[in-house]
Length: 224
Image 1 (cartoon, helix red, strand yellow):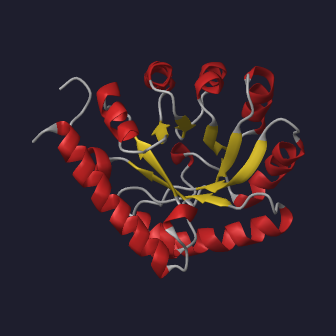
Image 2 (image 1 turned 90 degrees about the horizontal axis):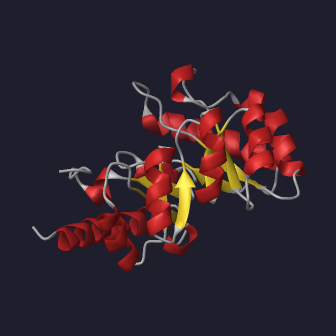
Image 3 (image 1 turned 180 degrees about the horizontal axis):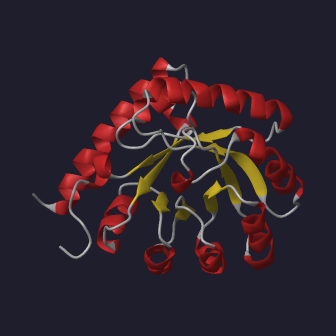
């Protein structure tokens, strides 16, 4: 199949599913941000999506993303686990950080970022450190620092559904955490949750930003 047709058909199906799930939760499609996750896929695929009206792209690795962002003008999101030695570069191409969970990393952002960033704080829903994020309690001091910054914006919370735990109950818990968080940080109205396997469930529990890769991109990887 022609790659452009393949991506177009996949995107259309995802868009229809987002619209349906948003409507079921009392929202409209315009209230949901779709982030096409393009890690391991070539710039040519990103150009196809850009031509189809997608302007938000997510990446997990700085080395791959920095090159892509230099070639395609769009709104780029970093959603991987943050490494201190990569932050200076990440700040040059990303406009949105989804995975901040450490005050030391925010201090580096303050030092290096050449432009304002929208920042999500990552909540860990399963207690496994290797998956990134912190407990909601541990994130409050960090949230206060980000919210007080005049240059960058605290926009919300992000989470990844835990492995081996019921997804719906996890996202229901996240929704409750987010509602409580907004009472202290009313500017943090966004919720980045939901990927290819669970975005409709995430939408039903208040997600505003969806990070979708394989459902749009398929299984054709960079270099094939």
